[in-house]
Length: 151
Ligand code: CA2
Image 1: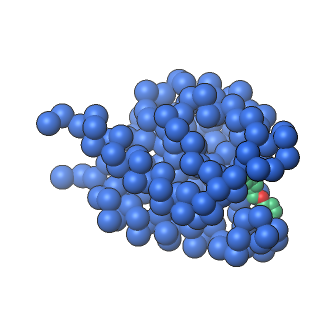
Image 2 (image 1 turned 30 degrees about the horizontal axis):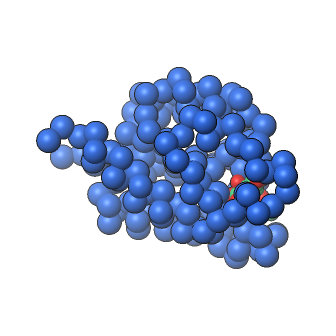
């Protein structure tokens, strides 16, 4: 039987990970985080579609695409987290469980990072555990999907 598909969507500048600001975001590249997600997904029997874009509209399009083809969305909106009503509306527009993730603990940082728009459309938020935030989100997503599945 096909495994449930989870979209893991990453926003602006996350492609720069591992090259700058290691004190905040660590030394792992986004490719290394994708590999972690693939391994965690395989253990949890989830198929992972991992993407990154620097463009808000492309992220909105991918959320819509997930609505047609996926069982759940894990979103690190990057800086768009703090500005994008469009990402929130897109999450609200699809009938899927969503989990917001962040590498850093956004509540320990500048005031402007403490508010998230997409969080209002998410089941929950996991922040501050570095790349492990993604692995923890996959465990939570596996539980959400299993709870929905017909028994
Ligand atoms: O902690 C997170 O995961 C963030 O979503 C990362 C975003 C930031 O704007 C959010 O407030 C929290 C930043 C993405 C990565 O930015 C980099 C910039 C320069 C070098 C490396 C990464």
